[in-house]
Image 1 (cartoon, rainbow, N blue to C red):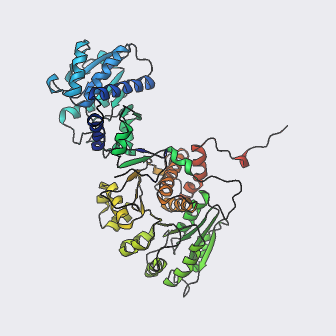
Image 2: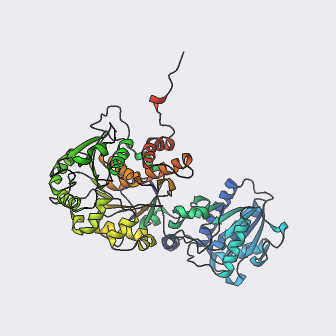
Image 3: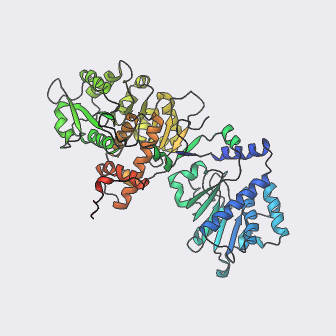
Length: 546
């Protein structure tokens, strides 16, 4: 399976699974002749560089290195040599008897013994206060670990965490006890000050719930050839700040008609705020013109005194009747004049709304790109054949509850395998699927069918986004980016990342939450400027006085 080629360079990083990372190592050795000792030496040298950067000069510093019998233990043993050469005072603490060490780990153990580096069984670590180190290096377990921890390793992990407030803890490749695929502890893991992960961050390390364990994450190249990565691409990718470079530019000669025309179709009694929030998301993301199409009876409530948002009140067969199939033609006409459409915010779930949505797509796809959110997804679950009429430029934005309904699963089943759920819906709909929540998952199902779809992960987990209307704002942002001509996958990924930045920025103003979805929309321009401090806001600049 290929990595997400539709995303531009610099917008994402590869996230190999532990199995894929092992395949990279094997290919470097088998296909290109790299000796495993060389890769281990490169890893240890890179980790030494991280310590120098994070901790400072190492001369005279007491370092305890916890070495398991696997390759991470070998990294720790190689690092001990380099620390000794830098003037540090290393003590290697072996988790297993010397005979249990194999291959490159055994080689580095012999070197350490030949050099006379101090060693002891790990069972004697921390017996006296005088033995407490300045730096503790965690080389117990690697990315192949799957929980639960064995009792002795659980005790050692707990011991490291007890020392974490008293010394600097560096984990090699991954904090021991952390699952390299899911980012979950088993059931505990080392809480490192920093982690030096080798060649690429493994999938689990990138997920937001892994951060309390990884500390500051350093990705350290160790020399895996580019040809290996091209031949064995990672099946996951992580969004990175470079994606914000693709926010559409404010061109000097643009006008409201060229800045993006968005149509939002939604709103029903009691849910009039949802389409307005989607409209505000589109507007704050830079759209030039935004129109909300809704039943005429609720138009004043949808308008809500916002002069910048236009409305298209749709005639109802009788006052208060709401949506009907007869409105579909008018909305299709409005969609033909728009650059992108968002359907579903506040639509409602009555029979009239269902008939409207069926009519909207019954002749086939809308003429332009479309975002389906909220109640539109409810009816997509009710009418599976609707998926075949969405067109090639559709983005679906379900939360876990909506995803569960779409796949006929429980929410717990969806949450247990979020990438798998997103892949399944993307394959079924041939659309770009955004499974919302902490560590949002994005999958593009529009490419050639294969054993799996590329999975893209967001690094954000922002509690300030967990408010009603937040998803409506996101739908509007994605629609605005589609209107600017961005491909659906890029529009979805950029919208998710930008939305996540807003949540992180709002945490500064609302550290215990309390913000509203309107605050999220209003934060969009500020979040971009915060990301790009070179951006100038001339209209707010004070005039110079002579």
